Image 1 (spheres, one colour):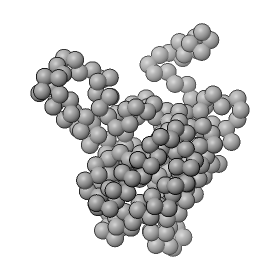
Image 2 (cartoon, rainbow, N blue to C red):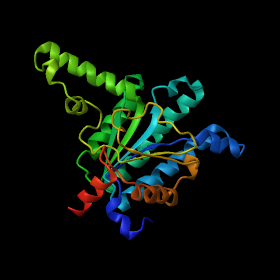
Image 3 (spheres, rainbow, N blue to C red):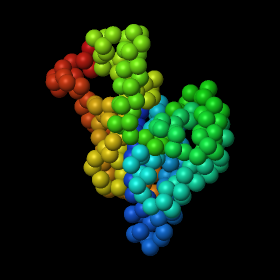
Image 4 (cartoon, rainbow, N blue to C red):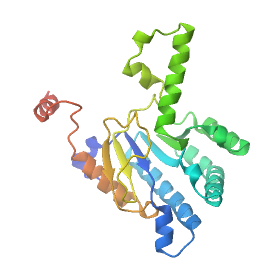
Length: 249
């Protein structure tokens, strides 16, 4: 676990790209679907750990807008896993005070999946222990484009003047704008890129990359990321001396 001395340095919001399911399966001579099913177990472990540690929000990149390019059978399996996992886990999430939310373009999903998403969100809406955000058919460029279309409509209607558009106004139109911005980004699987994930929201996020494949990721590896985060100095444009002065104020 993160040391007691670093408890106040825990991130409020963690964002994770869960990478490596397929490679985990391949390294064990198993079909890719087995890797995805094992990845769901890691999701449960990390959600439980975040609840126990008092993390405010956890956003997981479950399916990108680019993932539709994968083989049809694999996409169908992932969609089936969404349905199965939601049906199986929503009551447990609800009992544990988790508010479940989905971001991304839902239009490409089946009607059954869309209904299940809406029902799961409604069932857990009043919970406050952890915001669990699932990014599905999501892309950061899609998110920004959607926000700008909304703002363009407000300008066209006269509700908003172009000169009044600021970064704060734009931020208010982005997905999960009511949550703290991610403090810590984690990507498993060894790749070192953010792959069109939360492009606006990650502007000042600490980026942590690990070679650990997602099906292996558990509280031990989460603690390693949290310890790394606790030792980062977040300056937000200030100098190190200024940050230290603010701490002592």
